[in-house]
Picture 1 (cartoon, one colour):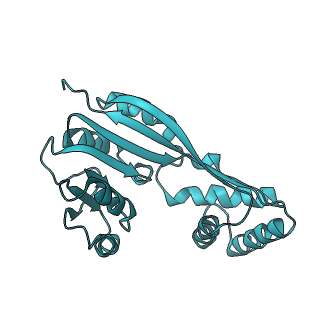
Picture 2 (cartoon, one colour):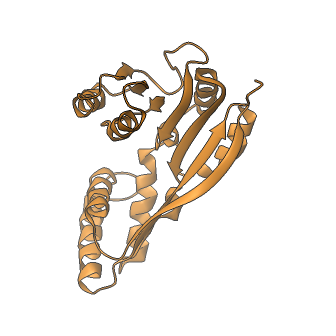
Amino acid sequence: MLDIGAGPGFLAAEIASEVGPSGHVCAIDRSREMLARAKHRCAQYPHVTFHEADADALPFPAASFDAAAAVQVYEYVSDIPAALYELRRALRPGGRAVIVDIDWASMVWEAQDRARATRIFHAWEEHLTDSHLPRRLSPLLHESGFDVAAVEPCTAFTLHPEPFVEGLATLISGFVPGRRGATAEDAAAWLEDLSATSSAGNYFFSLTAYLFLARRPPAD
């Protein structure tokens, strides 16, 4: 199993637990810091190995894996056709891949000042390469020689400021100042707006990722 963009190793650890010692998980990431975290998290799983690599230059022979996963990775990759070519090359014929990416236009986050919130979201789009990748991922997979078996939406939704959402708000407010006209004052005021919205009982957050199940044809 290949874990592309392993980050801090949560998925690699889950997969390792599922496949057991008779399986093998290869995890890649371009960040040495993330790889160090992932190695620490997966220390109890000797059947997990780690490699510093990019998604569009996988350091493995052709047809090395039965399955692969890339969760919120390709939306940060500049050359998607190259990354999908590498994915297809690394999979055995009949091998499957799970790809999950977010369409950031799906983010709905209620605020009293909606115009300011829109500026914040617009500036946040600079944190990745393609904020709407799911919209074109299916044809890109077909062009790269994959069969697309399924596409499913996965929506995170809450009416309360849960830890995941609060963490995302902190990331966004720290990133957007100086981008696309957003200022530090805008970011601070937006956070205050979210707090006020919550206090008024009007909190609303929704964000949708899309899961693609793709397969390299068996007769390929």
